Image 1 (cartoon, rainbow, N blue to C red):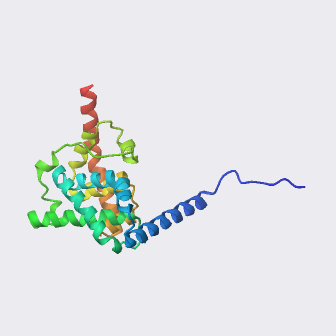
Image 2: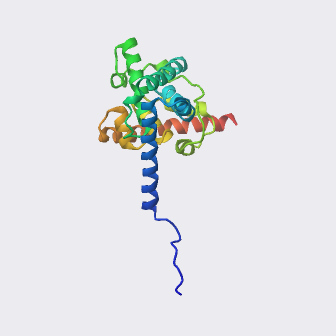
Image 3: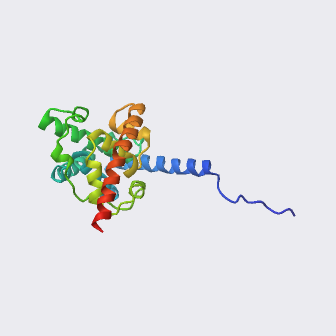
Length: 218
């Protein structure tokens, strides 16, 4: 009787495909649940995504009060328009798209400007703000920065203009793919890549400055 040979490990491409299928099935299940208005589903989604949504809104607006108001409004939209989510994209992609659209609407009401128009004219006082960013588990961006003080991280990011800050947060904090960021921001993939690269270049000296401040404070 010949000995059976078992693979020492599952091929990476097979594991990736299985993970993608799991995400797809989960997205479709969420979409179907929202359409049926399943009891308890909204509460489950809020618990799962509340930290990420609030973090995104804080970085996008630079204002805690505004972010908290928009946070509530985002979930109201999810509750009222849940049937619009078709499950073809990850739920968080749809969620962040709603949040971004609400931020844009709020900006237009106050300044008659879109996010793109605010790149060159961002308020310096808003850029200088620091606050504690809502968070749950550490992300790759936290490890990249190698800074323990979240206020310093927030300060460095808030020093960037809105569009570059948004792409960095979506890519490294929320771990969205470039294609998903393109959907959320409604920008071409090449534009997303450019903003990500330029944002990293602009962020580097701010990170170094924040690191030096931490070392001096020790």
